[in-house]
Amino acid sequence: MAGTYVSQEGLNKMVEELKHLETVERPSISKQIGEARDKGDLSENAEYDAAKEAQGLLESRIAILKEKIADAIVIDESKLSTDKVQILSKVQIKNTKNGAAMTYTLVSESEANLKEGKISIKTPIAQALLGKKVGDIVEVKVPAGKIPFEIMNISLS
Image (spheres, rainbow, N blue to C red):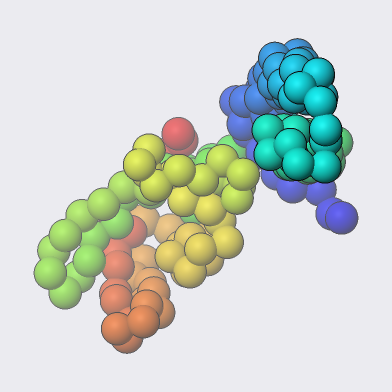
């Protein structure tokens, strides 16, 4: 798997989550399995089955996080510029059809959070914006057709 670019903040969040899963969630599930096991016949023990399933999901999440952390390439934010749109750019765009303005920060897939205005660089809108400059008009293909956006401003997140 090729490395994935992330911000230092994004890497820190993944490391924190991994630590929480390994030091809090894992012991909690082990305790639940032990308590369920103590209740007797495992062949008809729904609590035991549920705890084992939860353990499997947890271990899978831990493995995925470890892989993401190992493959993470931290972006040197000091080398970022506002000349053109790139990862970690905060881009203000305006829909040239209806005048609606919006601001997005382009981030890695693992850091995307629409509520915070952070979109993955793999989304169609981000792909259309990458490499463009203030004043450029880009067309973003959406299910309803194409929407033209003008890049109003590029800043650093």
